[in-house]
Image (cartoon, rainbow, N blue to C red):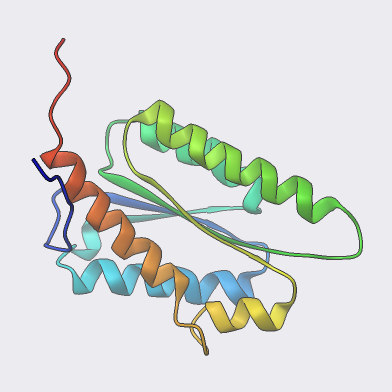
Length: 157
């Protein structure tokens, strides 16, 4: 048996957890995610956006939302740009691990839509300029995963 998701209109609510830090980049990511959800049949009233201070704070909120039982998927959006210190490495590592943890402990798709870039220019390219919009792509991934999860065998309890 082959199990696969698709991009058909999914059921349920979607949450977008978006960092305010680096908003020049994150706002277009958020707009792209909302656009993708709407284009795939998710009504605006089924989309909640939660703003957090920065990418480091995303996992806690994603986990809490995931455990609420109100969402089919959570899309995490942020931007971490390398600076002159090792702060970038710590934030990127903690956010990545935390988002994976939130997915595994909530049992729903928690999508990693954080940009980890060397420069602001790279980030802007990935937020809708030359490299497409990674927020849009994250939302499409969420839709596909929601549809896949409904097709997987249920656990015996």
